[in-house]
Length: 431
Image (cartoon, rainbow, N blue to C red):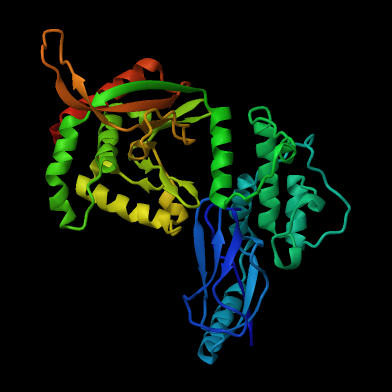
């Protein structure tokens, strides 16, 4: 007997993705854990594996379809042994569901669920409609509670059926649009570019779409301020070259980005305001304990920012190892949503591409991002009494920060600390 399986968790609740490839076909035999298809979300490409071994009877979706967690997507006829296991599992579920549970035990759960559901204002554009739609009783009840017009909701279940997740996501988006409508610029139609010559259109990838939305949101919401400074990294680069070959023998690539991650973490530990975020609803600054550094990585699919956790308490060798693994996963489109969550501050190093000036946009909800340009050897006069200049490796920095949380003096002191750590790498070992 065949079984229907659903799309597993794709990341945050309600997140959707696009089916970009099908790894097997109808009639193929698969083993448990084998990849059936790949789904591209707005951040990563995820492989959806088979939950049982058996034969693919049919697919309920096709390449290019949009899917969400819980979306039925494949029908598989399991092996006989697994069919038996499934019957046993169903028997256990039936036994559990037949157990009498008293009403008092259910009330706290109901209160929690109601407290967690967004409430749509009565005067909003989201209203109840009498239009016939495909939705179950639970979904209709939730729609009534939230004030959602089911005729406006796109079904995410089998054959477009509207489930509870789709109702919640619609309500969440409606509230977000109401709250942010005055902040995000209105989308304008593009002029007729074909009137000025031949054009070619190319669809944006999921990652490019996400970057577009996030950068628009950050630029519109956060009052950015920027500070620039050139710092001396001669000693830092000499130290890197000294230990580069030694770590390479251990399979670790010691890059300037690795060292800058450690420098940023140590400077942030000295100035905790850079390891915070702003709660706009309560007007509170939320300080964090762990310093997690996000590193912007350029990939064929677009910009992604994997996060290295607890950098302040991690050795340079381990930072290099983690960065190497995350960078490879990013370029191979194998990053998981958990690899890109929880960042405290972001590093965007474009020096390797020759950029001299970098004016980055803050990665919300963080309050700062450090842009790094290409370093160059220049004659340097230490003071007015120096007659013969010394060649020093100077690197341009640009610090972008949320001016609601951080003032200019804080930013200047933060850059000074970074400069001091780079000029004397030994400080990183004793900080």
